[in-house]
Amino acid sequence: MTPRTAVPSLVIGLLAAVSLAGCGAFTPYPTLPAIATPDQPAGTRVAICYSGLATSRMAAQAEAQKECPAGTTAEPVDTDYILNYCPLLVPAHATFVCKPNG
Image (cartoon, rainbow, N blue to C red):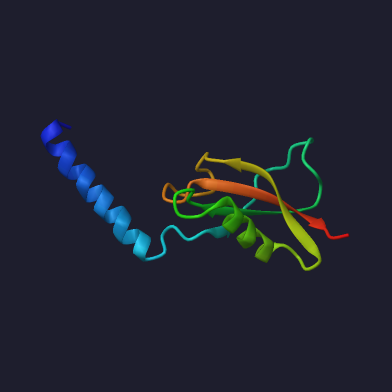
């Protein structure tokens, strides 16, 4: 790709991303949690895909709380950007453990 074609391609890509943002393409959503490691707490696990540019970690945790059973609190245990669970536009994959209240 030459510089002459790279700039228009970049502009088109940015315009597409901006138009998708208006459609909710960056909205966080639940996905499969990452496999637990021995050093992480036991319990029900939930995960959220989100964009760090459009969503704060607190907002992602609020979304995770909606996925946890009643009487539990979503506590973050891991965040990765490995694109195994989440697409490129929302690459952050945050895993939470639903810990019982009390």
